Length: 561
Image: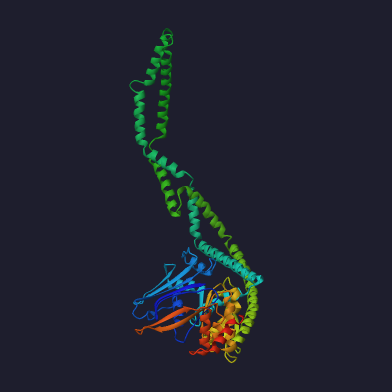
C-alpha cells in the first residue's frame, strides 16, 4: 500500500507531503488544478521517464519520494533479492531526483539503484492506468502469468507443475545426450592418440612411490665413487700395517693367560676385546661386500636417470603427479573401452529424449486445454463487467496461440494475449491499440475486478476512469472501484460525484496564485463535511445550492456495492 508521497520542486509544486490510507482514495478538483502532477510525481518515483521540464521554474532539481508498506511475502522483495539488493526494513521508500543538468538518480531505502530496478520493483507495487501504457496488464508478457493465476482450482495448478517437471526432465536428457555425443565425437577423433598414450604408459609401467625410490638410488649412484674411496681408506686403516683384528686377538690372549690371577678384574676387559675383535671382523666383511655392490657403473646411473626423467615427462604430459600415472593408465584404458559402447549409450539417450519430450508435450497439451477452459470463463466474466461500464458493444477475448518449439519452456507451449474490440465491426487487437484513454481505463477496471482475488496486492491508480460517462455508468464505475478497494488500495482522480461519494478517503486538489503571481498546487484532506461540500460543487458547479448539498448527502449515504 502507498502510505506517503513527498514532492519537492515538481512543475507547480514547491513542497508537498501527502499521507495515504487503505481503501478507496479519491482526488478531486477543478479541471487544470494539477491533479495529474501527482500522478507524474508517483510515476517518477516508480521509475517512469523523467525530464528537466518537470523541474519547477527557478529550482536546481526536483525530488519525489513514495513510501510503501508491503508484507514481507510481497513479490517486490523477491525482485530485490534476485538483484542481490538487501533490504532489512519492512517499508520500501522510493526516491528519485532529477537535476537541471539532466542527471537522474534513483534510490530504494536510501541505497542507490538503477532506474531499471526502481521500475521493476515499482511495477510490483503499483499500477497507474490511464497514463502509462506499458505498465502491468498493458504488457503482453504478463498475460500468461495472469491467466495461470486465474486458474485457481488445484487440478489446474497440478497440470502446471507437471508441465514444469516434464520440461526439466526433457531438458536434462537433451543436455546429457549432447554431452555424450560431444565426448564420443572427441574420443573418436583422438582414438589414435589415446592408444599411443596407453601404450607409452604400459611400456613404462609406473609404480606408486617409484619417484622417491629412484631419487634415492640416483643420489647414491652419483656419490658411489666418493663413498668407495672412503670405504677403502677405512679398510686400509683397519687391516694394513698393523692388522687391528690380530692385535685385538693377541691382546685378548695375553690377558686371558693371567685372568685367573686377577680375581675377576680382567674379565670385562677380555670380553670387551673379544667383542671388538668380532665387530672389527664384521666391519671389514661389510666394507668388502658393500664395495663390491657400489662398484662405479655409469650405465646403471644413466638408466636410473633416464627412467626418472621419463616418469617426469609423462607426469607433465598428463598433468598428474608421478604417483598417479598408474591410475591415469587405468582411466585411459577405461575410456578406450567405453568408446566401444558409446554408440549404444547415445541411442539409449536418444530414446530417453524422445520419451521425455513426449511426456512434456502431453503435459503441455493438458495445460493448454485447462488454459482454454479458464480463458473462456475469464472472457465471459470480463464481458459481463463491460456492460454496465458503457462498453456494451465491446468484446474481450483471451487469445491462446501455439509457440514455435524453440520458444517452448517450463510454462508450456502457449502464447497468451488479451485482445479487445470496442465495436462489432472492429477486429480485436491489443488493449492499448484499440481502446481510447477512457475506454482503456474501464477495460482495465473490469479486468481488475474479475482478477482481484488472483493478483498480488498492489496500489491501483485510475486517472479519470469515469471520463465521458455519467448517471448509471458512473455509479457502476464507482461501485467497481469500491469493490476493488476492499482488497487493494485504489487511488482515483475523478470528476464524477458518484465516484467521489464512495470514497473512504477524499482529498481536494487546488491551484492557487499568491500576491506575486506565483502559481502553486495544494492538496487538502477532506472531512465528511468537506467531502460533502466538494461533491456538491461537482454537482452544481461554482454556485453550490441547497439542492446540490442535499444530492451530495444522498449520494454519500447510499449503500456501497
